[in-house]
Image (tube, rainbow, N blue to C red; front, top):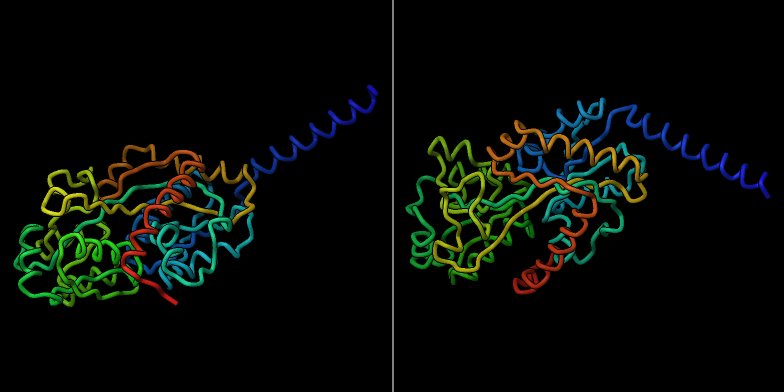
Length: 322
């Protein structure tokens, strides 16, 4: 009996040593970070803010691969189909993971296809207008929309994206008619706003702040329940004439389901370390991203809460994509 126990202890020790060596050897080659949106959009901007610093933490390059389409579904599916070895991660966005399941008749993935890595940031959206639009407040904008029903155009990063639903929710709660114009990402929508192709956008701050500061666009309000940490002097839509309005985007990192827990832990540690850096926090807040961080399970909880939240909103709009 003593011999059997000794053999079991030796076997357990061998397993633990092997696992420790495996963890210490990871990563030993570049990590691919799929961003399911085009270059220039909010997801791309924040991913590039992180990539260099996370690369230094891990000792290996983190290479961004933009793979847009279908509201983020194409890139997310590509990540889910990747080997669960810790060398592929995906940028997870509120629209793709908490809204799309209510909109698309056939989703190419479920949340069971992913393991959570980290909840990165919360992102209050900005309601911004082209500088030529004669509105300097939410009340001005509502009055303008009521005077010309269906004439004011708002751009979004695509049908069913969170900034599309933000516009529809605003129109419903403010009792106005707006025209929705979808684009293939937040970057193209911001460019359309800049050119005057659309009148307003409910969008990621990172895609518009430079042009707001230059006076080419005008920020009217933020979409979150509380004022943005990045723009504390800008009122919320809720306090500016549409009580109860609250839309906040978020993002994080997922890995293909079945990725070894020790590798998830290593990735989580690297991202948390970057998020705790004062310079990084300052840079994120400068472009409208509020740092979160935490354990992988915290991110799972957030995704589920948002999935439950957006179901009734989507149902009210009647929006569905084949």
